[in-house]
Image 1 (cartoon, rainbow, N blue to C red):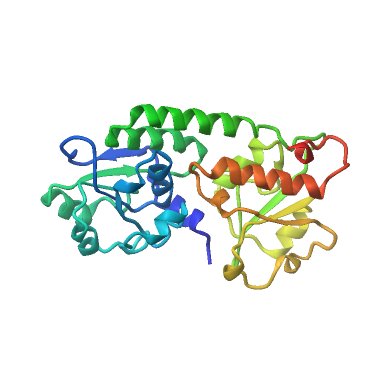
Image 2 (spheres, one colour):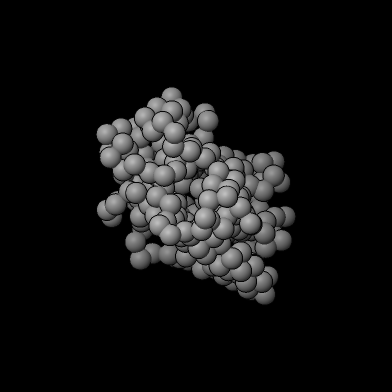
Length: 282
């Protein structure tokens, strides 16, 4: 089973980052969020009291767990959304089109389509939500915090030669993080080398490809309930396998830098004392 990170990535439309529908009269006061990333941002902006509905994947922050659910990512119930009487619905460009968009437009409900495929989408998403809520100053402050935390991680695990890393995000089939994925970008940002070449974000690999790649380290991003088998099934005896300490690393949003910093510390512990690695100092 592929992770939520992959599902969300597949929902994005190239070149379409934000797309407004009819704007509510004044700042949005009743919001249904169909994106976990947007839900996190709304609470981080101090607007959690304006969120009246979310998807079953909106599990951060803790306060979001008590909100009414309107479905998942691709199985949103339009009836459940409208029953909550929102003045703004936030979702992906793929979801906020077609029949759902028509229903929202007829009901006079504003819609804001956002894409969260990578770290570079977080600040535009924060600003778009801040504008829709009349919280521009709060949005700029959150962007500054995000940028400082993200920049602080640059080259945090760089060494010469670089550590060669394989990031596993699914096991049945074996799905790995390519250069164009969110986790591939994180690997580069940390100064590591991704052993997965090519343009695909989430390629499916064979066990033989894993053996040929000969990574120095495996990052295991598979949720325990999603796993078929375990890290040892990769056939890499003696290769350290580091489970992700915080699943916020699968979702570009306010919690992403902190989750990435936790991974840096975990990798640093595995390589403590080896020359050139700075992760154990963070």
